[in-house]
Length: 87
Image (tube, one colour):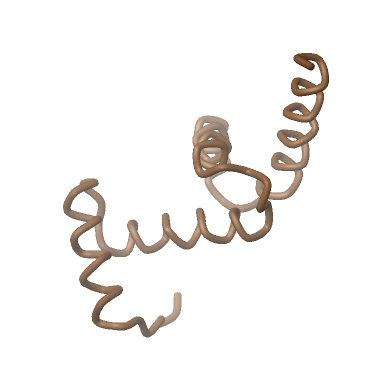
């Protein structure tokens, strides 16, 4: 575990979001970091798609990032196939 310095404004945002979503400040920060990392690695995915992948990983007991790239690649392939079939 390390220390991450953030601005006062970001800390205020974290505090407000954590209260609204019933998470600790650390849990809220980690959630935002996980979503942000996945969004940067997979710019074609929407926020909703990223959250679905995170939920699926959690249900499988894989709450870490091990799922990030392989699952996202599989999700992209499924989405592309579905788009071709629908067209």
